Length: 149
Image (tube, rainbow, N blue to C red; front, side, top):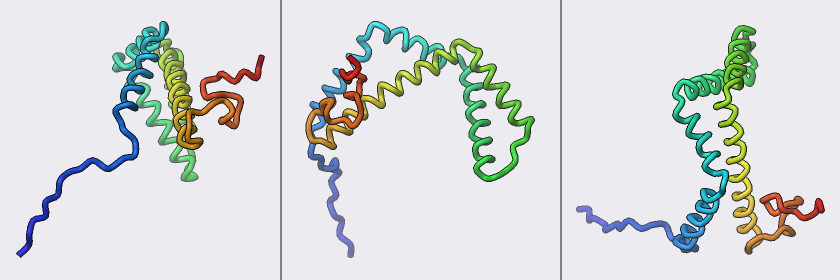
């Protein structure tokens, strides 16, 4: 006869207390949202997100691009017609200001995320809040290097 073992669900044990990290993350998010130009940036994201036709065309371009990439990697010949259709769709999308605004915003958001990640990763690497001297390049992760003065 089998006996039931009492398994209690427990969160994995961590070394760090998450509440102060959550509070600091909330403060970071507030620093981002509180920027004067944030509303403009967010408006450009919303303009893209709410434009279903543009999102569909963007998805189609990405799918066609992925298919062409797979064909190329597999050594398959890419039909000139396929390539022309891809380039036509790409050109049409890039002529759309909402699309180019969204791409610009995506690039900016990615840069901010990358910089935040660099600093967090460096914190774990060096075991302290990193300074400019802790980075292997002329930056503190946020573009403040002081070496171009």
